[in-house]
Amino acid sequence: MTAPVLLIGVGNRYRRDDGAGLELVRRLKDGLGAGVDAVESDGAAASLMEVWRGRTNVFLFDAVKSGASPGTIHRLDPGAEAIRAGHFRCSTHDFGVAEAVELSRAFGDLPEKFFIYGIEGKVFDEGEGLSSESESAVQELAAELMHSLARFIGNSSVAR
Amino acid sequence: MKDKIKTIQVNTLARVEGEGALRVKVRGKKVLDVALKIYEPPRFFEAFLRGRDFREVPDITARICGICPIAYLLGASQAMEDVCGVQVTGPIRALRRLVYDGEWIESHVLHMFMLHAPDFLGYEDAIQMTKDYPDVVKDALRMKKIGNRIMTLLGGREIHPINLRVGGFYKVPAKRELGTLTDDLKWGLDTALKSMKILTGLPYPDFEQDYELVAMRHPDEYAIIEGRIVSNKGIDIALREYDNTFTEEHVERSTALHTTVKGRTACLVGPLARYSHNFEQLTPLAKQAAHAAGLGPTCRNPFKSILVRGVEVVFAFEEALAIIENYEMPDEPAVTVQPRVGTGYGCTEAPRGICYHRYTIDDRGTVLDAKIVSPTAMNLRSIENDLWAFISANLHLPKEKLQWRCEQTIRNYDPCISCSAHFLKLELDET
Image (cartoon, chains in turn green, orange):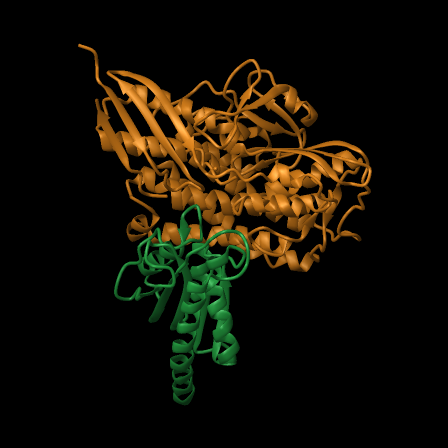
């Protein structure tokens, strides 16, 4: 059965802060259980579009390198604005998260409620473990979303 | 008065895999220099393979490329089988071709419709193209997904597969599992044929070069996983003669080696070379598609590589269906391979061209030496030659148009700079 909310983590846990999105989704899934579906992605556009096609409530988390201070949380609303390529780390032939969002928009396939969170990374070297800045951002977002998602899931299950 | 020198500077190549740049110097109507700069960091695979067990190598080399991991998995596996005196035949060999068909489909379709077609149609990128051609892009994404499905079913996952090994596979599918691909493959074949009509109508520059076309050739099949290396200028060698025939050299502007034919110069590998050497071994529908697209039995126009890739996609779908129809599940998923001292060679046709491997192992199977040549390294000199010739013939074009064509000329090769994005910054300096 499909859960009311889909969480997508994008990244590579073996490239330090690139794994921030994956780590965040892991913690949210641990806390929210069957209320959410959780998917890990390498960020390939075609696969991402398949993952969110037909879903209504989608939260996507990825590491970002935009030049902002490490640990900065970027909140993007694809429903309201175009997603700029270039900030997201993972892609194949430059065909990643931003391209997947914009292609979905062109097809009219964007999820109705779609929230993208970018966590500004500090280190993208080989190895495991987040920098303290990314870890703080993951903790902050996890706490914020755990609460609001639990409430949302509760409401949507009552509504059903 | 002397003509001024113009410099075309492209700082970041777009819609290619990896990081590269282009600098062109022009004086009057003469091109003075073309430099395709590859600044992707070196990756040291050959060095860190030394000391590893020979059975580990394919899983390590698979990480060289996310788009064409099979080329690196299989080339390494074959080289190990070669040194150990093992031949892989029958259904295991057929499955190797099938997984390679999947790689060709997903790699070719991504490049043709998402990265290359926008060049011909005048769009900045595939997203802009989607607004006018939504069905073409939707179909392309679905075809790509089918290629990925083959990779996942046989390889365990679509990127960096984990189910292939020296001697074959860890687990082979039952016939009914492969049968789950049939409907998708039939749809893919129909759609690939339909797509050829769209590709045929694209505007192609009138441009041909006297390439040394290098590809594999096999007596019984369109060579992908086995064969001799041949060229139209006299090469006809077994894999073990590769190093006597080709050479790699460092050039200051590139972290990728440049491959040349010894005693001559650049060569071209990839779809044009494969097609031109092996046209007669294409499947019937692929041949028909080629004829309908106006292609003869050879093709030397690099801009038409998109058409040839289209023909190869038709071929891959058609062959995949035939393999599945004829498949009988083997008793064992792999041939047992015992190490023995020596040097082995492997080479397969990656989507971008031949991908050569050579390994020396000791009697315990420890790797003592490794050499891997990517198809993009083999093509770099040809890409520069194409740019040189194309720019020389088209200096009358406005700056923006010339820049566009330069990018397109590079993308003709689908270069993989990581193994080698949509905005090229062009700086035209007049000094």
